[in-house]
Amino acid sequence: MNTTGGRQLAAALKAHGIEQVYGIPGTHNLEIFAGLHSEGIRVITPRHEQGGGYAADGSARVSGKPSVLITTTGPAALNAAAAMLQAHSDSVPVLLISPGVPVRHPGLGNGLLHEVRSQSGVFDSIVESSVRVTSPGEIPQAVAYAFATMTTGRNKPVYLEIPLDVIEEDGPHTPVQPVSADVRLPLDEAALDSAAASLEAAKKPLLIAGGGSRGAGRATAQLAEALGAPIVETTAGMGVLESPNRIGAIGGLAAFHTLLGESDALIAVGTELAPSEFWDPGMRLPETVVRIDIDQRAMITNAAPSHQLLARAEEAVAGLVDRLTGQPAEGELWSQPLTQEIEAERSEWHKPFKALTEALNIHRQTIDGSLTLVGDSSMSCYYGLQLGVRLREGDRYLYPAGGGTLGYSLPAGIGAKFGRPSDEVIAVAGDGGAMFTIQELMAAVEHRLAVSFIIIDNGGYGEIAREMLERGDAPTAVALGRPDFVALANALGMQAQKVTDASQLATGLAEAREAQAPRLFVMDEHSPTAEYLVNNPQFGKSKPSARPVHME
Image 1: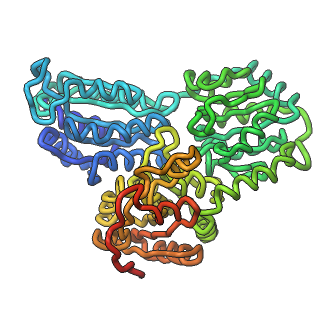
Image 2 (image 1 turned 180 degrees about the vertical axis):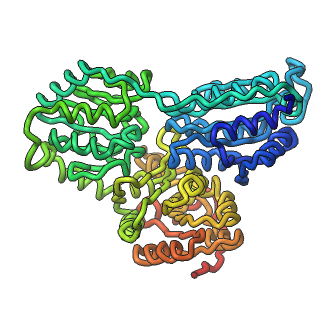
Image 3 (image 1 turned 180 degrees about the horizontal axis):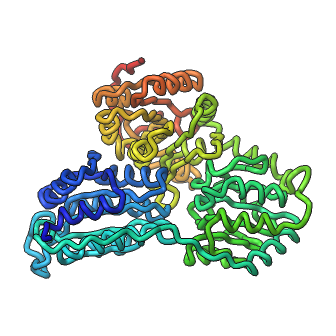
């Protein structure tokens, strides 16, 4: 039968298991929203398309399934571009759908509302695949193609553009069935044999567990313990496993590179070995590098491994464990002499955020199920959460590692709660990053989502100020006015409070969980950089007039 492009899109999304989308309706996408309503697909409305993109990202990360963001043309789609870049850099399956200029549109433009000369061209440079259809009948196949692309090998985002005239136009509807994403790669037995022999010969093996090791946590821990290998996590690998060999997400520490430099074999499980993760574009890798990945291109990115194991992590790691013939390693890790150096450096960077992480660790002990912790690209996260919070196997840490975007955590925390409602979700941001997407707290209020939001306020862009001071520069444009975040949250209908120590925060988190409602906590950071920013507002914006702080 014939039906409109907008309704064909909604039917195709439904066929691919989509029960909810994130999106904002606009003049050019109304037929899409009519189709979503007819198909019974729930719409979560963000307050800004970038926030919607981060929410879709958070939902996809915790659910393991693609999420969908729908915008209107022009500025709306471009507002989502930063979120799509973040999804691409961190291998997250987000599908962005937007109208585009009509099929029969003047090539040089004529001032159409929201007109962009080549909207799909913008996303060509951002996501894995950018597709523009030209008729309603193409839409079911384009959706099937998008889902297959997002879930083949390493997950990735896709952009689908439907010209605004095609959205409203009737056309023949031929459904296309989803393609199974459960593709099993055959294990290369000879490669497994060779890799296992090289690892057994190593004296100082090191294992890096990335996000691709999720689902293989216990086998990965078993492999490391059998070899006596320290385990370093990436940010996406936090919460994948528990093991006495686990050192943590220390990729940003100088001591990690000392550890890596002393190793004679590296097992890289589901990690890009990305410079943004390890803060060094020139990582010194040993000659023996056993790399396990599901994506052929990722296999040779940032390293030329001596042993390539193209397979699911759980299968490849189990295959290595089965082939180890020697006795399990006993006693201390080979890296034990480095432990004091690692802990001293970790403690130094983590110091300003000790109250935050202490509270989270106390709270974690009271949670029976899983915790999803969401971080922003802020000091409180890459120095605080990553170095100080102890996650358990099955927990998740969502962090914008590759794109390094500010404003990620608040909306991503909302998306994570939609993606895995049974998890306890806590989102942490700095004051600068929080202001990028603070409006998204309204969605948490509207849907009464039990998400705890924490803002660490240091009065500005602390890391950039630190780097300027380190260069000998006068910090410029980094001190920010300090809004009354508690009053702002109250105005949105959310309970909020200022906390001053770990005990107060832990108590507040417990109360928020009991209430099963969103709540905001604001905590000041105490560090030399924070004090500098607060005491030198002339380098940034002026402070707002003093207002009373609400306590609840």
